Length: 55
View 1: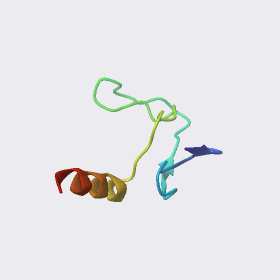
View 2 (view 1 turned 90 degrees about the vertical axis):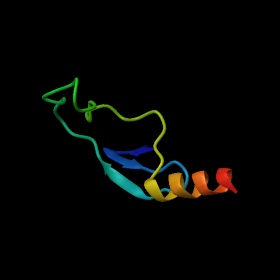
View 3 (view 1 turned 90 degrees about the horizontal axis):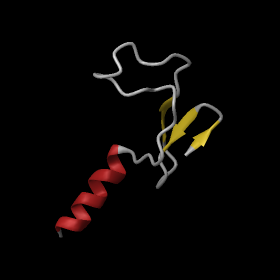
């Protein structure tokens, strides 16, 4: 989820970071952080989802 230039987790709405004004210097090594992700999940929600699937 994007609010202004901030990236939030789509599940719990925890702030995860900020979009950068410049494109990545090494696009083959680092993802382009000037474009928002289609779906963002924080590490806590990802761990909870993996634990739920494993149970």
